Image 1 (cartoon, rainbow, N blue to C red):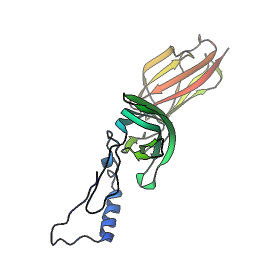
Image 2 (cartoon, helix red, strand yellow; image 1 turned 180 degrees about the vertical axis):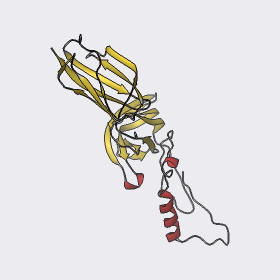
Image 3 (tube, rainbow, N blue to C red; image 1 turned 60 degrees about the horizontal axis):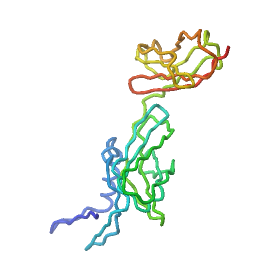
Image 4 (cartoon, rainbow, N blue to C red; image 1 turned 90 degrees about the vertical axis):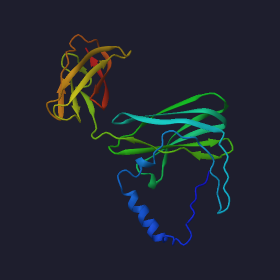
Length: 246
């Protein structure tokens, strides 16, 4: 597919300088990049076009979904699906804080080669940023041919949420947890899991009294071993592993 424009007869084209200036001004607006985002797309070849002709052929990989979500302050979950693949070697997942700066590769995921059924892919990107982070896929064939997907944006957290155990290791009857990043009077939940993933403590009705919250759950009968605490607010969560000693 090729896009072009035809000037009406007698219309004076704008100067390259003005066009560049208008584009630069648009890029400074807060909604410039989010307005470019399309989360569902079909990857297709885009061949060079001249003024009189334009031709394109579909890539042998059909991308039907590419999406992501921030799991917590430091973790982004990304997934995509294809309905058909022919000679698909691998995908590269690329990331940037600003598409005009270019992208960096953060993961390489093996493709399915040639297959005519639904394929699902998933990757966890450990990335902390309070603003928007932008991702795209680079699909590469066995012969080196490649194409890009559309760009998706993932919104960051306004503040980092963290939880730590004090002390660590510590005894169940004395161990406490320090939580940073919550606003005063913000509601949150606290859940503690054992090494098998079973819940051994839960409090779903907590509220902060300061930006640095200290909680002291009742764990005096807890067995020695490794545990994980998860703290979750309305739109953020944080986890921390700690060790209980006799």
